[in-house]
Amino acid sequence: MKLHTISLFLTLAAFWLLNSGHNTLFILLLGLASILLVLVIVHRMDVVDHESQPLYLTRNIFSYYLWLIKEIIKANIIVVKHIWLGNQSISPTLSRIKMSQKTDMGKVIYANSITLTPGTVAIDLIGDEIIVHALLKKDIDSLLAGEMNRRISLLER
Image (cartoon, rainbow, N blue to C red):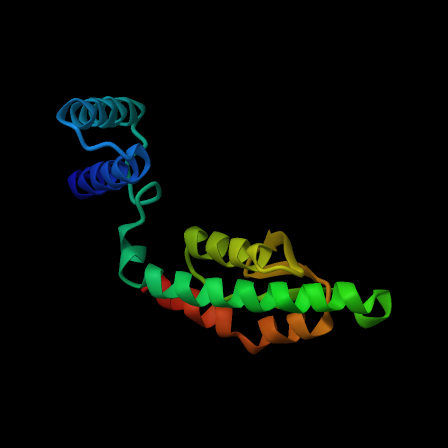
């Protein structure tokens, strides 16, 4: 619990510093006061735990974010190309994809990553499967190949 509180404090402090744009003593003290107030509130609500601060993800999350950003950019280019080509170039597909994630957090990251990638939408999570709608059949084939699934499973370790 203590480690999660420290992590939350550091996250809030970094967020405050990135958004404030001012580093005067008064502004920093206001930031510290607001962070401490938030910490008191979340402790009274008893919501600081492994789920709200998933520290186990920290080790690999930045490399995953870089990979995901690259995939989002590539998918954007493909979607724009198919918009220009018209309806004949798309092949809308609905499919069930097996996922190997063990934690709820891993499953949610997988579903959100699919939805973030243009041309694909995660519709539902059912057990160890996810229902995905894709603009192109090759997007489903890409998910079935398992690269995204593998990368997210690495985050859970």
